Amino acid sequence: MGRFVVGMFAGVMLLASVPAGHAAEITVESPSSPTLGREPPTLRLTGALRQGDAAAMRRLLVRLKAERTGLGTGLGTGLGTGPLATVELSSLGGDLNEGLELGYLFRDFNVATVVRRRDICLSACALAFLGGTAKREGTERTAAHGIEVGARLGFHTFYLNTQSADAPTADDPVRSRRQGFREAQAATAALVRYA
Image (cartoon, rainbow, N blue to C red; front, side):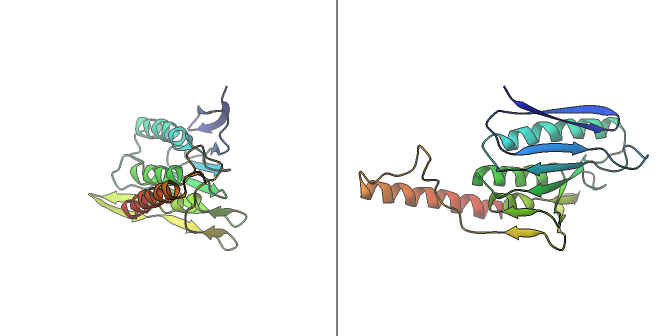
């Protein structure tokens, strides 16, 4: 059974299902002004990034985009009129692939990212942060990511989770080194494509 996070947007209840076992939580805040439909909503992503979190974010962004388009504002339609939403990030990191996937989503859905002064965004979270985009003009994208004074954003090299079922073992050191090298090459290639 999944955990559900509820928020309001333009008078419509949003419900995002987050599968059980996933530490990241995504919440939606209503625009604070009475000009519903003009201010993009703020989403808050907190907790460790785990497999499936990008899929949950995608479902939410698809719904937000449909709602914004339904209001006739043009926001989030890729027309260069501003971000679909702003995502506040607060995470110590987690799954590298999920961080990259979130960054791609933020680019594709025209989502701005921010790390607030009380928050920390490390590792895979920092990579997702880099995907923040404000508008697109044709194929051009304008980066839209901000860090408030006092916030912490940190990058480091990736590492292999030794608790993973795919982690190399000491049974065959040569095979383990080869496997580790292949995984490092694949991760490096993914980072280069993302950049």
